[in-house]
Length: 126
Image 1 (cartoon, one colour):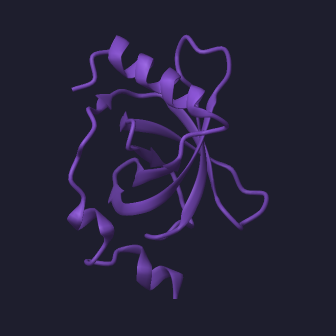
Image 2 (image 1 turned 90 degrees about the horizontal axis):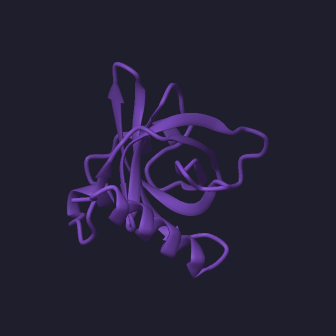
């Protein structure tokens, strides 16, 4: 059943409209599907913004609609940032699977949002 939902043509992504600037870049991430214990998967960002992130990972069990916990290693930051999001798109690529996430929750406090906004501004997110 999960495999059928993986490449649904009626994903939320088809209705998505960007309201936040995006930063293209290659930063380390780790993520896990909420409710699936013990598996943290590495990846690298393609682009990110306040509203979400797109990254590539060598393998995934995620399907569209899954909620994930994601850790982003932000260059210049003392600690990684942690976010919760929902998978809105999956695409196969030569490097693995490209996953698009819409953020549901920007970390422990609004401080994470502020740090991410400052990082995006400093690097010229467009």
